[in-house]
Image (cartoon, rainbow, N blue to C red):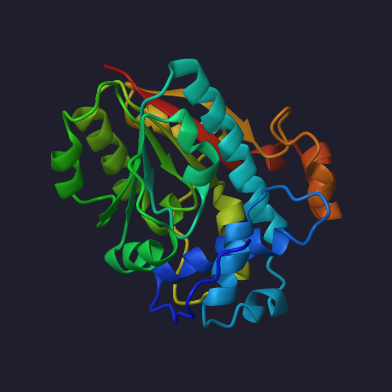
Length: 278
């Protein structure tokens, strides 16, 4: 039986409010006969939130894009954890996602870091679990690093889905270098877009009180240029096989044509796995 949550009005503004877009997208996807992401909890949370989600439909937000992004990242994270064995996963800006529900069994423990108002909302929907810990704060804070440093049996895997966009390039560069120094041997999986697609994304962004800032060059060449000890272990461009196999028909026709006919379109969207060398 589906869980019934108490009706809640989310007190979210600016960047935190953007978490409602992928939540809505996953809920929408559940009505598809062959959903990309199976996430009935997303439907239950959307039903419980007193929020006008119809604005995303009216603004023609492509729900499937967010679900495909999550699926591609899930697949890569699964491969990494199966190859390395169980270890701590630290997820930045999880919002109201359910990645722990899908992949938590592959990790030794799972730590989620988000703004205080987001964690407060998240705790209303996700029960306490011995394998999962929620921490309030920004990923840029030193406090969580000091708290977690030295508490893990192996270098952690960091995840940032849909998060880096709201920070500047210098902020992300400095943040990655701090992760390298604080957690040597760890790695991170994150997504990014090209400079051109960043402009298009801002033009289409449904929440005008938050702007996207972060973009990368093709093949994520910026990362090792910032620091040669930050090595690109996996680079998944838009449409790359096998990650997108079976999902391309869900994209708009012009995106399917672009990835076939325009080579730079592959770098419009990317998922990057970066390893911090010792």
